[in-house]
Length: 400
Ligand SMILES: *Cc1c(COP(=O)(O)O)cnc(C)c1O
Image 1 (cartoon, rainbow, N blue to C red):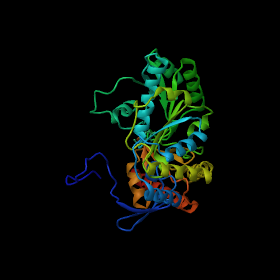
Image 2 (cartoon, protein in one colour):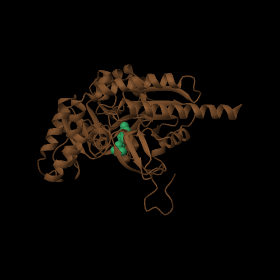
Image 3 (cartoon, rainbow, N blue to C red):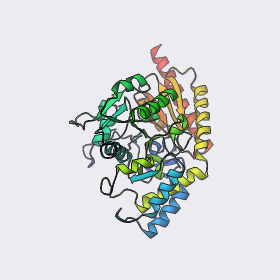
Image 4 (tube, helix red, strand yellow):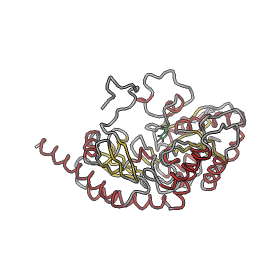
């Protein structure tokens, strides 16, 4: 349903006809009292479920102390969250912001500035990939390899080139004396839950070393345990120079981060980049609590196990369903590729009380909380599979 003419909101979203008013764990309720099982987590944001106690406690404690101070002062929570992230990743330095697009914007700016100020090679081009998604600011929508997000926004910033995903020769052919970085998702989320091939990622990392390019990994959807590792690059045996986080980082509180290797710190200096709301005491309190909870409860391991279980269960329940082409997933980022556009099926699944979302043109995407109770997951999957079975039976009946 689109916004009505009467809404005072810009019509930037095609909203479902559902108004959610309360959430607890992996259950949500709408304004009529109807209950839903949440298999989408606000699109990979509420990774600890709704209103998780540990994060709520830290937030309330911080709300009583101090909400906001300028980044012209030291913010201990920022240092603490940065230490937590760098202790548990290949990165050594962190810049905090509030959203994913801003985190990628910071990555793009750092790659350019490091090349121009430190390496002094004048390079600025970044190679990204078809079907990628990197955000909605002018630079990040330009980095995004999908034309639909660019329509009407020209002229776009210069300096981006696009390669087919998983095609190392195509990437090689785009590298020139202006290239400073390659940026990609390890699993394209919005694009349709498409994982990068391990060999491709290793070849990319080698190419970056050989050509002295920065490897930037967009972990905004895949980070903080979602894929069965704390960060998805860990599946590939590589270390990015820069990676970005947002969605799951604050368990529902807005926070983003751009992380990089120590030598890149030289690329920025005081005044070269900043954000009023970047890493406020409250946002970083949420981030600390969220990351500590993910680590203490071994949620990446749980995501790996539950994800494998889910794919297996879906493969067996959906076997022979002509609407389903393939089930694929890494941890709890799971896609059901359909043989036709999935919009109508998704609306029917919502009607039956299970929240899922699309990805790409034909994919039903499941991104449940990493903490989802087994019973909720099973019930949600059963209801969804019943809808798909009924839809398949109905279309067979109408065809024959
Ligand atoms: C959601 C997303 C973004 C954009 O994040 P915003 O917080 O909406 O700006 C960027 N990259 C990826 C991979 C995403 O999934």
